[in-house]
Length: 245
Image 1 (cartoon, helix red, strand yellow):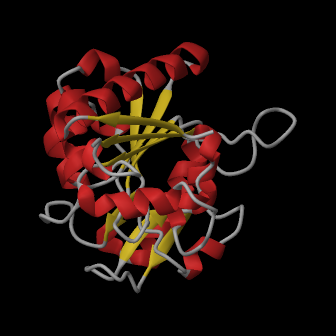
Image 2 (cartoon, rainbow, N blue to C red):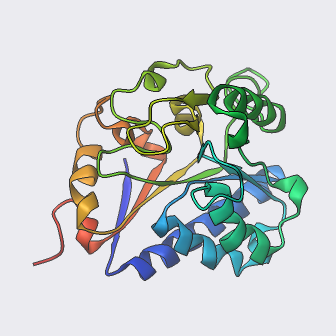
Image 3 (tube, rainbow, N blue to C red):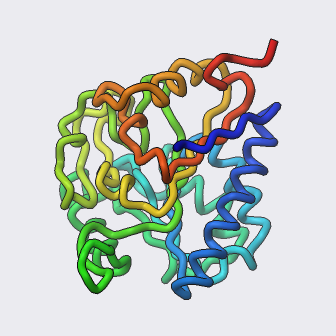
C-alpha cells in the first residue's frame, strides 16, 4: 500500500522528504555497503536537495544517478544535473566518480544507450537465483509528478511506457513539455527500485495525485509505480481531497 504523508506547507514536505531519503540511504549502506540515489528535477525536489546537501555525512558512499534529463548541455538552466549540482552535489562535496549524469548533449538515443550501459554495469539487479540479473535496482528514486500524472519523462500514453521489463533508459523525442528531446529511466527501473519517494505541492497537483491513487492506467504514468514501494509526501494543497476544511 502507498504510504502518504500530508504536510502543512512546501518547506515541511522538503524536510520530511530529506529525512526519508537519509533513512533509506543509511539502510542501504548498512545492508550492502553502498547506496544508489536517483534524482529528478523540479522546484519541490530542489528544496529537498538543499537540505540533503547540508548533510554531507548522510551522503557518504552514495552514488547519485538521475531519473531523467533534458537533452541540453549540463550548464543549461533547464538541466536537471545543474539543479542537483548547485543544491546537493557541490554543497555535500560528492566526488565526481560517484556522480553519474545523463549525457543529454548526446541526444536522446545515444544518451539513453550510454546511460543504460553505465547504470547496468554499476548497479546490480536481483531477478536471478544469485540475486543478480534483471534491470538495475536503485535504492531510492526521488520523483515529482506533473499535473498530467507524468513521472520522470514518462508521459501519458507514450510508447516508452511499453518498453518492456528489460528496458533501462530510454530516449524521448516527442515530450509534450519543452524541450521535446529527453532521456528517462524506464518504468521497469522505477518499478524495480527499492523505494520511490514522490513529492507534490500546490493545488495544481491535487487532481494528478487523485488519479495516481486510482486504478493503474497508461494515461497516468505515476499510477503504474509499485505502490508497496511508493512513499508520497505532499502539502495540504496537493492532498487528494484538497486542504483540510
